[in-house]
Image (tube, rainbow, N blue to C red; front, side):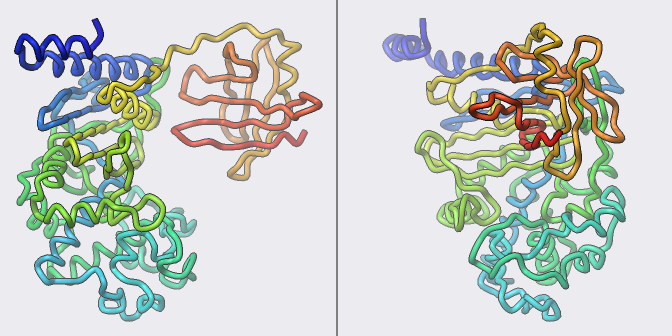
Length: 449
């Protein structure tokens, strides 16, 4: 009996919660599948129409302690911090302490581009200010150790803008660094103290803050660069003085659920203000949120990524849909997992991943792929046949094995979640390049030898 029939029966005989129970089991099954394939570790919360349908941990919280993720596990949320920073800015505007139409020159008169840029430009990533995390000198001096505000400011203050403010969009942590410092100026206290006073305490959000490394709790997750049955590689945590107002927050699914409730119920800010914050200015970015839709329903949210951790947050006000995923595995496929759950909620079709099964490939056929590939990022990858297997190597790294899939020209690695698709030239059918997919990113390579 499908879920639609169950729902009709429940309506006729008056049994409450039958459909909710069915969708909960389906959501649980979806996430169990992703976890079982080592493609998710973390905590998930899904709610709709005011009812929490799934709130559960999947996978390993800390392998060294043998603990599992739970509803209370604490994770850094990376770039999703921007949602909170934007909220704080709008709360302070509501209190008359600033205006998003203020130019940055009011707060940073010595910054040479300040007169062209407004707080709104910072919120919407339309300022054109380069990202300090992309500065090689700043990066080389360390991002896992405390850095001063002066270090960060000097990494971008003399650089030209990428474009005229308002003309385009480029996500930059520099924007939210400046917002954090503006918040400190108008509140005469630290950014962290202001966030606690005006947002977190007002919403009753606990187990949330900054300086994840210094926070003491048995519920903290250990982040991993690789987390599967073959390898577990712990990740270092970026220091919160570096990520700061752009990405320094840690919290729980419970905390983010309270934040979602504030958006839906107009807490802290009027509903119209929340709606404007989640509406796109240029491209998909609003004021601290990405604008998106769920099968035609307007939605807002954010994705965060920091070393060893991923976060995904989405809210659709029309039917109070809330989906939150927090992960401590950089290889977690949180976007695809989220898409499957959304499809289930709205009775749409979706395809769950299946375990990859390697197939035997004749060594003579493997020779088609041999050669040197110039990869995006400025390095060469060598592909070669050895011991009846296809291997790859990059200078300074261990050799790795490529296992063939049933699909022609498709390969994967067993030890980490990396896929390779070789590209053939039309006409000659010779291999001309490769696409390598890892951590939701694609890297193209050109065969040159």
